[in-house]
Image (cartoon, rainbow, N blue to C red; front, side, top):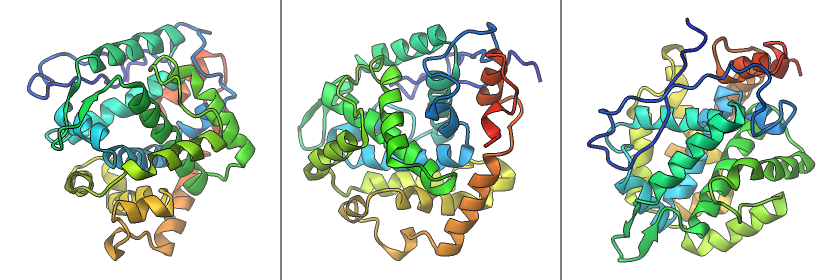
Length: 300
């Protein structure tokens, strides 16, 4: 594989034209020594390298977002997720990697494009509630859900984190949060809990939540060898949610419950992937860009 050819990213609100525009490519390997928004010794570089926490945490974050009426309408009405979930998930995954690992100017350019795209996303929910994607409160919530989802999935299925490390990660996340205009995103575990509590009255069950889970269950989102694990990884994404959110979204049925043996299997997989560098991946390329060994993030 050519080291300069990597995966795709980008989002746009019009699903009808989303496949017509070439998807941008990102070079994580060059230029040598170019710093990212996050330092190589950050928790972010650890958390976002593991595909187990990325997939599971992504499920968690989306469930939290779809539980909020305005975010739900914005996501479902202005993205290609309902019609092309795989492309949407790949774009989101790479956008996350770009924000964490790519040279800072590349990350800033991509985030700026997302912010400009969001300027066109607005409307009314089925109840008539107005929404716009760049509403500061909604931006703060989306940033909060992403940080929570990926970090807690990592802590539960890859390696445990202390509360002090959680505080560190929320503080680190300000590097990209401010570029996304999420100026009120949590800076600590305490602020994350406060934001969850403030959002409690606004979270609700909705058919779109279950439609999302059904779409992800049917979509070939994981590499073929891991695809049999996909249903349990979806249940793992639910398990990462606080118990009160699970009950509020009515995800407390037996069919959504992660079994103990499934939890142990995913924890073993997550721990194994903590030690195994994935060739041609953004974390490996970015380590090399910074003059570090390819296995720099995998030596714990």
